[in-house]
Amino acid sequence: DVKVTQSSRYLVKRTGEKVFLECVQDMDHENMFWYRQDPGLGLRLIYFSYDVKMKEKGDIPEGYSVSREKKERFSLILESASTNQTSMYLCASSPRANEQFFGPGTRLTVL
Amino acid sequence: AQRVTQPEKLLSVFKGAPVELKCNYSYSGSPELFWYVQYSRQRLQLLLRHISRESIKGFTADLNKGETSFHLKKPFAQEEDSAMYYCALTGTSYGKLTFGQGTILTVHP
Image 1 (cartoon, rainbow over the protein chains, first blue to last red):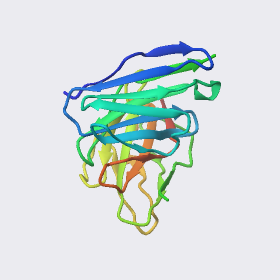
Image 2: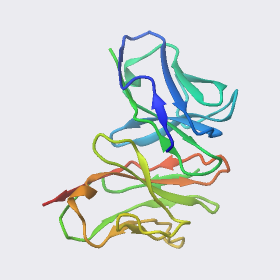
Image 3: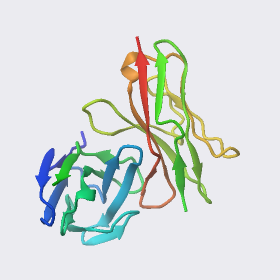
Image 4: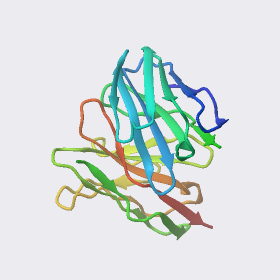
């Protein structure tokens, strides 16, 4: 059974703080993704990675960066959190060009 | 650019009634289409994909390339079908998905 875990279910941070969201998958998947989920906007891709140390910008990368030092771990970094980054963040992983498996999500609130 | 449109934010039906969730897409090549579902307090999961041509939980979806649509249908809705449904498209080798805005389906008893 594929397992994608995210480090926190709920997170509250202050404007300007540096925020790390961690995602770990245990199925040796090549691809990993970070989305944000907002009502009425659906899921929007922030960044994805198709291999260790490889990353590609998604549709809304501004204000975010990512790190993939190990195959199983994909981190999303908010260098200086802002209130408009308050959202639900979903991580996903997949074998090449196949079904994506999602984590439970992290609800981030930036005050 | 690829785009997925789900015109209905909310859809309400009664138990036993037919249900259709609409999805239209724009893509210049040959896309692969998916429906994902998120039940209350559960993670997002794949419901079905067009290439498998399966019926999952009584749901089916047919890819209509002429109308660029991939509507999700079920002849008799059940209360446990209440959830958020997302239509998604990929056309890349990395499997990068473009999602629609989502439709919240509520099935009343």
